[in-house]
Amino acid sequence: MLKIFISCVVLVRGHRLIAAVDAEMETRDFANDEMLSTGETNMDDVSFTDDTMSVGHNGTMKQASQITWKKVAGCYDVLEGHPKVWGLKQVSVGWKASEVWGVTRNFRIYWRQGKSGTWQKVGGDLVHVSVNGKNGEHVWGVNFNNDIYYRAGLGGQWKHIAGKLTQISVGQGGHVWGVNRERGGTIYFRNGANGQWKGIGGKLVYVSVGGAKGEHVWGVNRNGDIYYRNGVGGQWVNIPGKLVQIEVSDAGEVYGVNSADTIYKRIGGVNGKWVQVPGELVHVDIGGSRKHTKYLWGANRARKIFYRKEQISDDGM
Image (tube, rainbow, N blue to C red; front, side, top):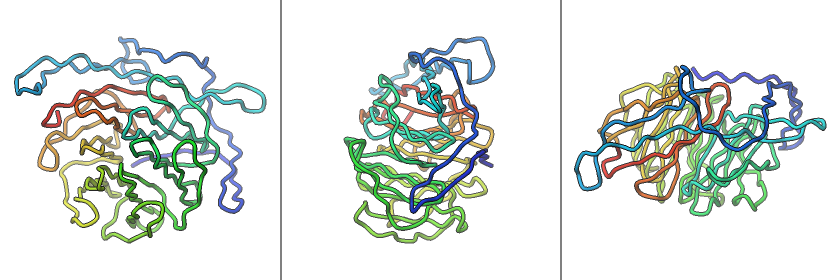
């Protein structure tokens, strides 16, 4: 079960959500990103490495280079004249790994130019955000009132889109999928900002879409059951396993987390298997346009932010 704890007073003015929040804040210095040290037992403090054998591009076995989660500095803001640093509860990384968006527990929105950038506050209030497109031009989000918004990249402006969703995902080609938990997990598809919402059979509480044609669709229902669909014209196929959150890249790589914050990646696609990834997160996403190098971004239960460079061979390992 995914648990979100929010302490706030909410006022809705039209379609804009304004929140006066009494939230837990982190007051550490807004410093450079830091490598995690070893020797502890949770992901707040530990550098997890993955040094198992992997398959090279030519089919030979090779020792994988050590892949380490790197802790990222939080999102700087000034509240009532005092500097604060916020963590993220959800993060989204685009087709280009240089496009990273996230939201805090008090609905603030932030953007970052990849692992080398710094967080910049973006106007508006959202509980979930999704970014994609070759230049990060597709940004979609939903707010606390389940209102839907679209933005043509960082330089655009938020545009209200008719409908109600609790979670949303956009693929590289601008195909949009979303769910509404408050309506029993109903599923919707839309062909871009100028399209129309189309109801899709089934019930999900989380959905993710990837691919230039929106051909990779994965989701989980309220029981943690996992489903795959080959685009809007496909049929839902049950995949063994249990997850509470799932994401698929535009190349079809799949990652997710379960109710115990354990991270998994899918090896071999639909007919493959789940393999555990070191670390603990409540939300994970994958992005990057290079075939064999992708970036995982995520947030843990303490809203600490992490990224990890992921080397992927031709068979998805």
